[in-house]
Image 1 (cartoon, one colour):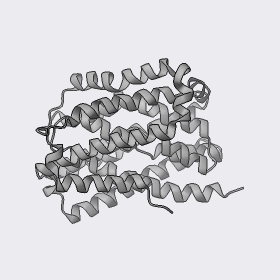
Image 2 (cartoon, rainbow, N blue to C red):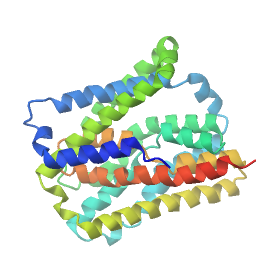
Image 3 (cartoon, rainbow, N blue to C red):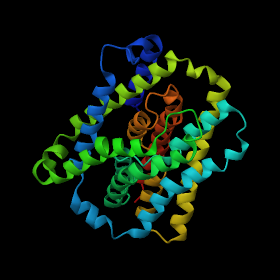
Length: 318
C-alpha cells in the first residue's frame, strides 16, 4: 500500500508550524484567517455544485440504511465518548476528552467513503447520498453537541454567533452551488481532481494556522508520549466499536452484502475537512484548537488504512 501524500503533507505542515509558529500568529502580516474563510466558502460552493439532486432523490428510498448510518455518525459515536465523561477528573484530561467529543460529533467524509465502497463493491448511490447528507446534518448537529460542554469552559463559545458563521461561510455557499448545479455541475465533476487539490490546500492552511497558534502558546505541553499513545489506542478502539456496531445492526436488519458494506464504511468515517473547518469556526482564536484537532488527525489515517485493507479483501469476492 502506498502512503497517502495528503497525510505526509499534514505532517510537513505541522512541522512547519512547530519551527515557524510566528508565521501563523494573529500579528502576522499575511491575513491567513481571511484567506482560510474565503477558501472554506469556496470548498462548500464546489461541494454544492457537485451534489446531484437525482442521486439524492434516488437515495431516499433506502431509508433503513440511511437511518443506521446517520445514527452511527451522530449518536453512537458521541454516546461512546460521553460514557467516559464521569471518569475525567483533571483539567488536561477534560481538554483531551472534549477533543474526542469533537471527533465523535463530526459528519462522515464524502470522497473516501464513496471510493472505499466502490472498491469493496458496495451500494455506491447510497454511499454518495449518506456521505453528502451527513455534511449538511453536521452543520446543525456538531455545534449542538459541542455547545453542551464548551459553554462550561474558558473557550469563547457563542452558539448564535457560530450558527451565523456556519450559515454564511458554509450553508449559503452550498445552496448557491446547488442552484448553479444545472449550469456548472458537469464542469465541477469533470475537474473534480483539481477541486480536491484546492480543498486539501485550504485544509493544510487551516491546520498550519491552528497548530502554529497552539505551539506559540505551548498548549501541547499537556500531552506527553504516554498521553499520545493512549490517544492513538483510544482512536483505534473507538473506530472498531462503531465498526462492529454497524456490522451487527446491518445483519439484524437483514441488509444485503452491498448495503452492509455501505453502512460499515460510511457509518465509521469522520471528515477531516469538516473537522478543520468547524474547528476554525467553533473554537475561533482559541489556543487549544491544535489539541481539538489531534484525535481527528489521528483518526483520518487510521480509518483509511483499516478500511483500505477491508475494501480490497471484499472487492475480490465473487
